[in-house]
Length: 97
Image (cartoon, rainbow, N blue to C red; front, side):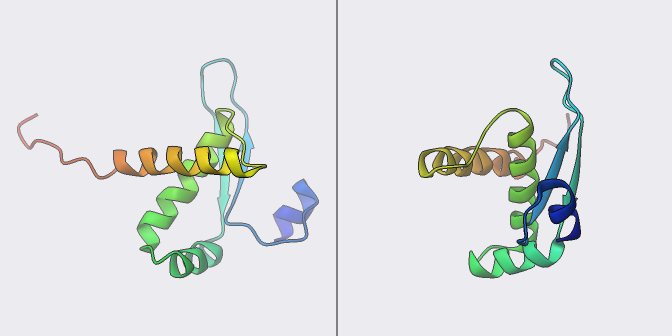
């Protein structure tokens, strides 16, 4: 919460804070993840900590590429994109490639 107050002036807990340093087409960012908040969200959403951590990371990356989540429509789009991102981590790789 200290980083949230210091940099965003928010007096609430959050699962991730993203600092976007990207330039042109090169994504460069720094993420601060609260595993306390991730564990809480995982429990509330009936998700594994791994899946919730992937969701949080994808959320941060999506913010860095311009997605917002300030209203219901944006939050719905963000959640869909998060799920697409998480699915990328569950691809079965061929052992002979």
